[in-house]
Length: 490
Image (cartoon, rainbow, N blue to C red; front, side, top):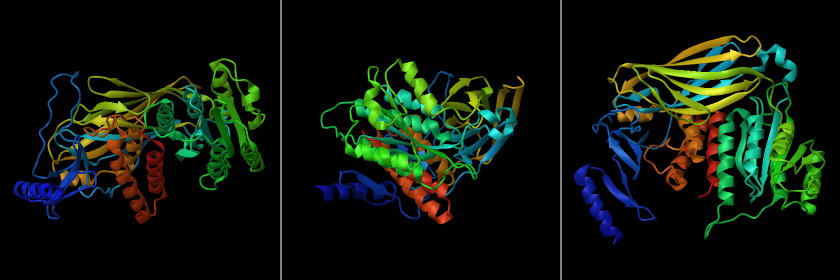
């Protein structure tokens, strides 16, 4: 039967598009492989990954009302061999007290109206605010250990994430199975950290027939956290040794035993600060006594939020208020479809991204999905990003702006091959934790199984590219993707 199917599809394929005979995978899927001489790109659609020839020009999808949902002319374009070989070039907006670094996923934009991912790194350098110098704390290497299934775990962990600064490094460890959820990342990636926590905790509280559960191992999780925070690589900025800290947020059910006591002692010998906060509304402080003296339990939820904020204070005082980014384009109008964090507001000729108030030493990394207007192949594209914000000390409104350049094209092979793997990989990580739920238009992103093979391919591609270019940042992104694949389950 399998051979007959392969023969039938092979004949159909040869007649229809002249491709090589297909192969049947172990799960019964038929995989078509384009011939080596055929030009085009791969496209992620609702039916999986398909091949698009350069002669198959998509037709623009006309929107007749601003209320119509955005529908791209194609699915998500990737190189036909599935390997990204290009990385983005950062473009910086340099304002007084604020730096915004922009990285686009594409230099070539489909003429039929494509979609571009824009990575945004908003940084508030502490050196720009001498008056706030005394409020700026030392950088930290912190591991947040989640222990239990209480619905309060994720909200309390979020308090710690919101207090992370640019020079901080943070990792998330799950006591269920003593596994790393997200490896050590800069504090600017708090949206990714937050989404990973939310996804894992949501899976922990779900119950279902046949679901695999991991035994809780708080001692093992503390040992893993100790390994992360005592590692030598990336300890803050040069000349500023990081405070090493482990924050445990627990329901108190798994505390106790000789192994736990031995690990608490090992953390103390290593000079690691251990703090713990009880998640449930009713938990006696004595239940956390095995974790040391810096523990808090009971009280109101607001009291426990304050306890987390005391353990992980903000990087400094609030120095910028009402920070917003305005995005416009020529040709117009460009539209913001989705942003991983913050709020978006639409206007007639531009869209706004609202980031709110920022601390001295804070940094935020977000990704926005931008829908580009239909235009003529070969013509230039200009995307202008303007930052507007208010300086707290002076009360003055400040602005700064920068323009990113691109070009329209109608060759799907060139467009796909020119895409920037580093930006797409970061967006993939956010899609996995549902912070960019529609980043892979047409693929089944509501089910990680539909995204998992693509993300695994990206991790392999980035790791290989990082080795070839000697770029450790690409290797770190590959590690993030692989860790998320291991930690996040369906």
